[in-house]
Length: 144
View 1 (spheres, rainbow, N blue to C red):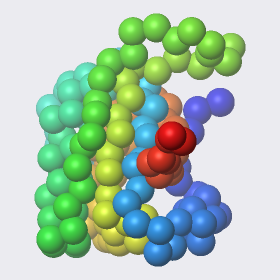
View 2: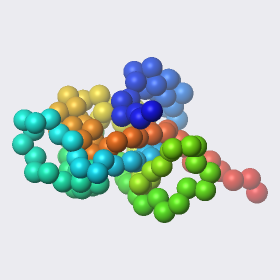
View 3: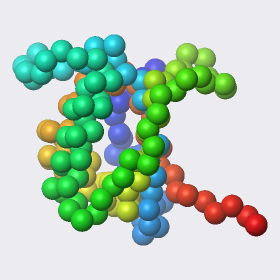
């Protein structure tokens, strides 16, 4: 089974758990489509899912974030290709992992709930990805 949609229940649960708790790191497990799948009337030149994500979605997301949450920057902490998965569930494979940090979960919600995100960025994410996991986390201090 593949997933591309954020559920309202999942977003509300994360909002409740993370409210007022400071920076959040969002872990993205990404499986790209071989060819990006846009609506027929979208007007985009054909490209791979990876190209749609890296060259279209990320810049569109950055533009929306700058407009919706000016001065509350997000940062791509890390993005890399998956070379091997040592303990995968049957049939679960990923092409890349991205970790993006936001000043708070509230900032992320303002961005992804905005009409601009839904019209300018999300169509590229949907066209690019065949499957996706989106995991909220926070840095932990190590003992000692």
